[in-house]
Length: 268
Image (cartoon, rainbow, N blue to C red; front, top):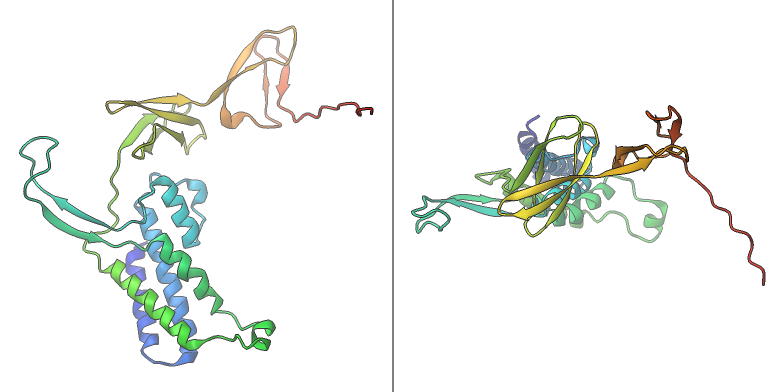
């Protein structure tokens, strides 16, 4: 889906409703603007589709989606201006740079400030609100809607959008062979990584000079048979209660279990 195109349609309908200056139509303005904010956040998420955990695909609230994006890249909601130029010397900033434009992003601050607040206007005032004379203030709602519409319009007017830059480490998963790609945030020496195909987890260690080490998170587990000295190696995500395996040495069955240790009552 072209979420950016959808956001333009939601914004257009919201502006049309605002133009009627009819308080009874503000609920439709609120609905369209909430959908515009959702569409822009989903559009931003698509730029990180290779890094977005599949387990989070069902997340639809913009605040939760943006939280995931900021965990992937702390600058995911920051505006940025991009310029290009030809280097005369490798690694030295060109004397002449040509601006490509500035990308405006619907950031977390705007989402937190407005999204949930808009939702409260879609409900009938409660008995408590009515009794305390705190029914909907339509002038306040209109001002908020105008502020959000302006923010959405700025994002949609960006000449460039969904640019993602960064340093990445890649490796075929040691367990299933599927390709993995992980962003290496600036200033971090260790970054956790997980294969979205099989669940195998790693720690990526920055070794310097653009080199990294993928350290698999594995455990060496001895057979539960005291007379057997065989050990197996399992991935961290496999270490869970109820998980079992057959020892290839003694042919006995081993199962991870939760345990309880009893201590006798202390005597005064």
